[in-house]
Amino acid sequence: MTTGQMSAIGIGWDVRGWQGSAQAVAVVGWQADSSSLHWLGVSPLFRLSSRIAPDLAALLRPALQDEALLAQVEACPQLALGIDAPLAFPRALRDLLNGQPLSCAVPEREIDNPYAYRDCDRWIHQQYGKKPLSATFDRLGNNATLALSMLPNLSDLQLVPTVLPQARRAVLEVYPALAKVAGKASPARPELAALLPADVVPDTDRYDAALCALMALQYAAGGRVAQLPALLTPPAGMALDEGWVYHFARP
Image 1 (cartoon, rainbow, N blue to C red):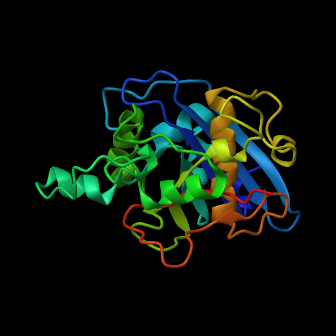
Image 2: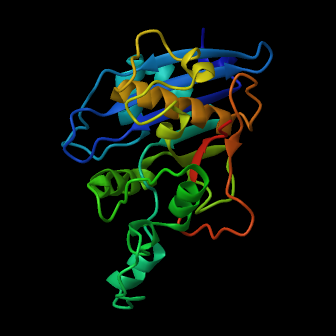
């Protein structure tokens, strides 16, 4: 089967930092006429080359391994790359680094620290009682800076919703942990687990990459993949300069 038969393609990247040797990428396609999903590849764990600046092909090649298939995936008109890493930093942190600190008052809760968490992080905490890792206070800054530095090299993919409200070829921040039954080490919700490749197992980077790919696919397909839950977009009134964490609706 060629990707020319695919109506939309989702790519998932479980980021493992600048020196990480456990990067994982998964690629899944969807056919609108048959409403079927097709896994095009899930990479082994790999390390990005230090010889050349990585681009979209550098992410896809370990998962696809066939140059013709890689070229077809890159050319798909409805394509999304879902990245499990923050793709924006808190606006208060940006001001702080520019010499314009907002406050030095110690908040009662860490989630309320404007230098550590974004509005979208606080929204997730309020909705689900789950506190995302902070790109400032945790090691997640390693992953975030790698992903952000690669954005200009990702072909014509546009960052949503920070740069554009929506795009046919998009890069988006996703959160695979919200697709699981409990914590990060737990399996995906049953309706999602049934769609994953048989050779990916819970609590692995390849498993999370596959979940990221499903979220990216639902975005690329405009929400038309019937087997997948709806992908939640930013609520009305939320400022988009700090980005948004796309995730599947939860029951």
